[in-house]
Image (cartoon, rainbow, N blue to C red; front, side, top):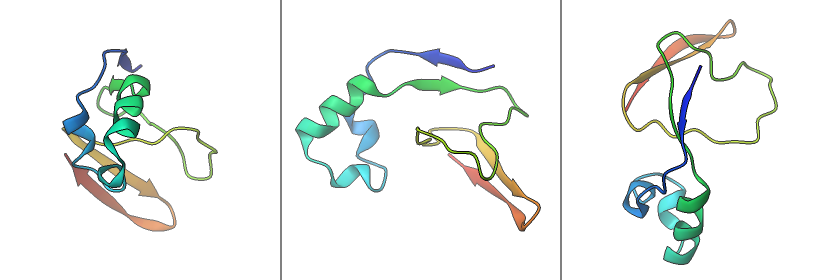
Length: 78
């Protein structure tokens, strides 16, 4: 189960991610107040292929695996 923090995230954090770095400062400030910092234990599934999701994930640190029976497993490191 995720550990979710509602702390306001530093705008500089968003400036390193595409397409967020293209947003103006006012929009980034609003986004920083809405974003949630989540920590997930190893082995937890965040979502499955084909699911409709209403959120976007950005990896700040650690490693995730993108798995699908249709494609080779791909590791992403943050």
